[in-house]
Length: 636
Image (tube, rainbow, N blue to C red; front, side):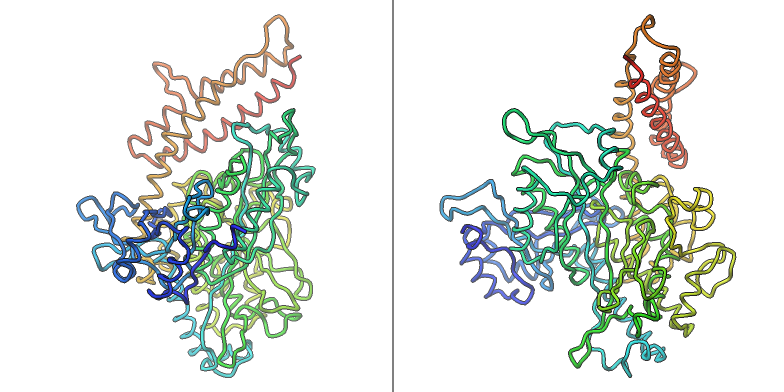
């Protein structure tokens, strides 16, 4: 078989010049090598180095990498045009993967052309490592070092871990996994929102059998992913989508479905690298089968968006060969977590406001985080109704995943990320926040029972770590059991725009210190670089994409009735529609439209005003669409 002759990965333990050269010479289908650096905006580099040149100068490439400049990567305030030297240096500590172009079969091998993609670090001016991979690597290093110091300084914790000394620990390991959701459709097909909403409400697609090109593409993808060694656990339909139709040509058309693929966890840095490669494979295989793929968080308004639930755990490998979970309690049926686990969870909850700009960093991300679509809308956790009966509450921000029979599976599931997130930064800020909570819990010598009481406190109650006026735990459905006002009072008000989200960096200096106190992870200039890049992306997309698309939507809402052939209800609806269209998109001499006012605010860098107007625009557009749908339905 063709696949049996192809090279899919080069594991970390085989990264010697001799072994790499032998593998590349054996697999002549690998024609190029690409060093994959990641900037602060989550964009990766891809340069095609002919494999013969790479083999010839391999030692030099592995040590010195390749050079680019500041205009090629997003590192504002760091790599400027007058200070732009950036080197891309290979990371020898993780697996490397071969990216295949299945549409390009060469004569000499009869195999697809492959590019060996090597995850790499970016170095500015020969001495400063920058970018998302660097941040995650350094966060992992800081977490391991400081957790070990906390264990040494607080020996009471050994009782809960089943060890007598920190000297028994050989290595602390951070593990992670992501669940990849995405939409697929046949090209040029447009969504019928009403059909999609109805199908979602009836759960007609969730976990159902795939058919036609979707089934073929999904099966091929899962098989290819296993060739890479990702150890796929499952692929299935998600809640969104409608049933595909068999056309007169015998081919399925009008495909519009939501899928999910899950694979095995790995170390934190490797997990982020794996996810990046998985997304490339998914796109390539589905497109080769005539299907468009989108990893957008909210590709269609009014229908379920795509999340990327991120699972995080911490374990310790002991010198005797045993592995213990550093979150799991000593007795699984009596406690939910041990003090380290409770502290980690409380750290995420207390500091989430400064984590959120790294997670919901785009208009698309925030569009998904709205009530009613199984996406989190407030900072709250659920750990289960009792320690004996683990439960999963799908309405909270972060949940506890546990199996009484398998303590090693104890971990946290952060539900706010989406497939467009920079997973390196999501994991980095999460582990930094966890570390803050662990430090507080262990320094205070808290027991699991005391920490559960803290986590379960009511708003208004004092606590040694969590904020007085907030609640942090609910085992209820937070969408149905609380009003919007109650949610905001108990769990905090969620940001609606990217500008509002970025304000968290300025509104709470104490929480920001949780990130900035680890200078080797995120320093002030790195934070400013990220903020500027994110702000620029928000303003540019709002000005040049969202506003024109909204204007096109306004123009599509055309009058469909004749005045002599309609009801008074139709006339009333059209009057409301026309007023909304004018308010949104039509300028007058003495009054500018809402869309024009947003553009003017952005042009003048008045981001506070632009943010407020964007919120108003979203409400007006929703009102316009709802009224127009009602208007069309009533016409004969």
